[in-house]
Image (tube, rainbow, N blue to C red; front, side, top):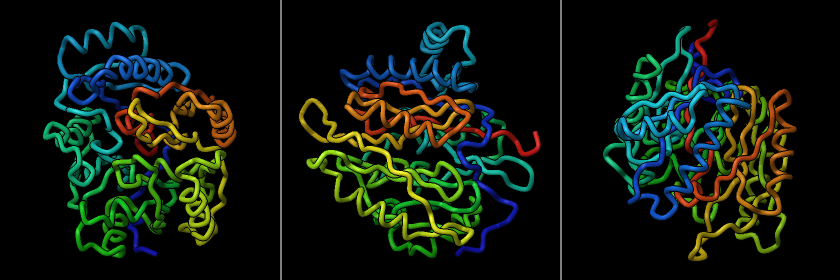
Length: 342
């Protein structure tokens, strides 16, 4: 248990948003032949957010010409384009975490080193400050190396994370779990950190928790179970479920696990496994948007996740091209919560 600041709170994703931020795919060097496909999927995702999802969508773009194309393609929707410096689209990791502190919203920017030095583009280092500027929020920096995809909260002081990310020598060499917990308590208001172990095959993030375990309410955690005997993640996912069931939240209560199917083996054109996870869904104001990978389990996963978010529409949006970059819809989004009392 950590001594969290009571006036600081990282809201749950299902709390009301003022806006959702994304960054339009733009670098051929990064996306290769999947660039156009990723853009088509992004366009459908943005439409879903701005219509069914009830979101105001703020999209970073590389230049004014791209801004015109995006706003033309998504014309008539609550979508605005902003010219900004960035390289890749993973705003969950490069953007700030918005927290409520003393009655206002501030943007907490962790240090970012390209997922342990694997993919570090200098332009991405200024993304957190740009999003904070667009939101009109104070930017608060911390030296802890962490990505947003490594943090999952119930909004009531409990955080799920993985040892493979925050305790990895490629991020925070020499830091103990207790030292990390103190930073999370001070910056995010986390009272209990639940350490999990696991990583999907092909995941260059070293095991982001937003592909492994997601809260769908206080005390309730969604996890995947493999349906296929040959699923390369089968044993790891089973161990992960056991870990979650053995954990307790900030209230001292056991966590309930709700199981959904895993997508099974999803590979790129060279046969290399991709980190496909239905848990990389995004909870918008009026919908929960689930990535689709073209597997037999897509529809079942959308229905199962939707059942956990009553009052929201459950929508599946294809994500196969975006997945080749290493993530899905949760990875590309950053929500800005409404100001407390607004």
